[in-house]
Image 1: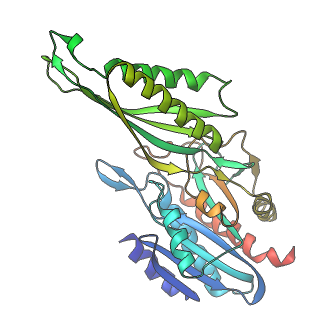
Image 2: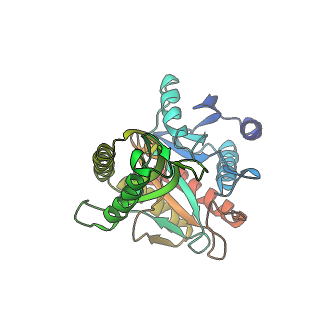
Length: 343
């Protein structure tokens, strides 16, 4: 339904090229300017956050889509810009799969671009303030699942079981220790336990199996890989000592999202022309972003725009994207596009 609605509005903007089912339900529209120049891409996310009440746009992705549709309307009415502008409506950002799938599909269509941009609304900053990030915008992360298999016993004879309970507790404590050990890693790392299940609801049986799921994140990819290896080694040693088998799998891998200096300067220059306030973030975002897959094939910049400080944080029930962001964001993107030939 979302893709159908977007497609309806995009067709009214008469792009020179229009592709559907890119990376799944993704849509790509291309607009050709009348002047020669580099190709430039702007991306928004199409997906919502799953909740007990069904999918809900608790991240502002509905607003991000509206911004790109507003930009499409402007491009339709004024082609006096250089190069080509691509608008990417990306699916599956929340699970970290959409961008990677789009990269594969656009290569089949011969779609490429020199620069790429994306923004995210940020409820921790004043409305329409532009928040820039030096180098890393968002952390790399991965979900790690450790499944322990042993053997149960009667609860009266726990010594006869191969019980994963204390092994899992040890892993939780080891992750907590590594989170605070500044000597192990070059930069920020964080391991978060997101799910633990041990045994069954039976007071007569000692557990013989268990599972722990954690999210590991780091600003540096090498730190993240080291974090994974250290937990693997620790878990394997503890499992062996308790006569347990451990199977380790990984899920929802996000590379770190890194900004390019030239692309970042284009955003800053556009914001200054519009009189928009710019602030540099003190540190990268702890969350992850699959826009990183576009940064590997172009000079990229991901930045935030303030949603106003009086709202809830993203992904929480009741979060609302401020419509007052829409036109300033459209104007900012337009400034990036239409002022390039004046550099």
